[in-house]
Amino acid sequence: HGMAQERGDKESIDYAEFYNGYLQPYFGCFTCETTKNILDAISTGESKNITWDAWRFWLVWAFRQYPEEIRSIDDLNETVFRHGILPSFLAKEMPDKKA
Image (cartoon, rainbow, N blue to C red):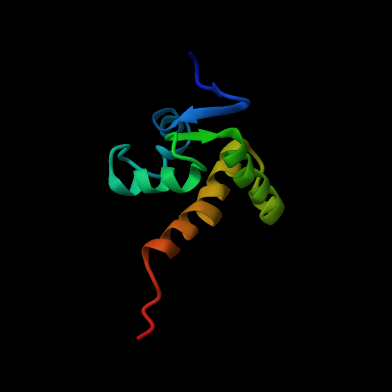
């Protein structure tokens, strides 16, 4: 049924399709734990799908925060991952070592 699926009134894409379309340049393994954790971090529900609203949040954020870095759709995707998703994921994975 194509890439976008209707879930109620929300369009979404399943994890495998999102990985193939967006994550593969950044993560070489779809079934690896890190990739699954990144997908879970982007997803806003339990459905194992990425909604358009969730992805749109990151795209708009990147445009507002780093407009000088975005000249193409590839730049936009790279900016989202490099400045948004990866740092927030790594911050959760690597707690402060204050002891």
